[in-house]
Image 1 (cartoon, rainbow, N blue to C red):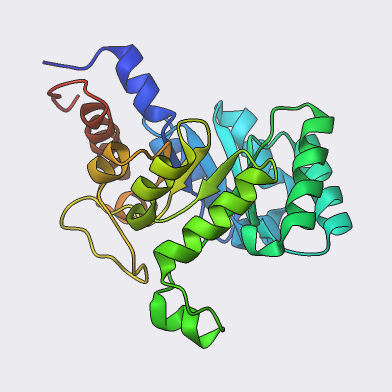
Image 2: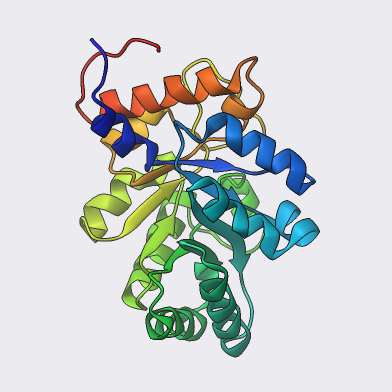
Length: 250
């Protein structure tokens, strides 16, 4: 049986595609290949530094939400002003490091609320490229899961609307924080995919079942022989994980 359009549309909004390209032209081409199945564009440092606000404008051009992944980490006043700028650009989501501390987190959350554009701040807990030995080398003795939980609770207490966490931590954070925070999980790899430089990964089905709100999936789609088909297969897997049933390819 095929999925109803509304079910696939719901799955589409749970999928973010990273625009990890060096130019706006390449980013637009990549986004156009997946836009029917993935509803959020993640604009990271590489593209934003190269192209600036034009990269964020791709969202309105292609009718996709924009996840501006700048991982802000600075003094409160600087981050507050950056949040205001992101609101004016029309971003739907914006990342900042939970490790920036309560003053920075509260200033950012208050400014986002004041601007009233619907921007959702997402606090990064522990990068998915880090494991316990990496944390020890920067002076953190806690395990990644414990550190993610500590930072996640701090961010939510400071008014931040969501978190970025690995598939390994999402179940615990959902249990601890309840249904309200948006939990975004990078490091998503369909079964059989190469983990690449990610050290704490999971499948789309696992992440959804453990309480993830949004999945970030890049290389398995971008580097596929047919990115459009890969994106559709991913959306179908997410829909099935949400309880939609069996799917056939279009």
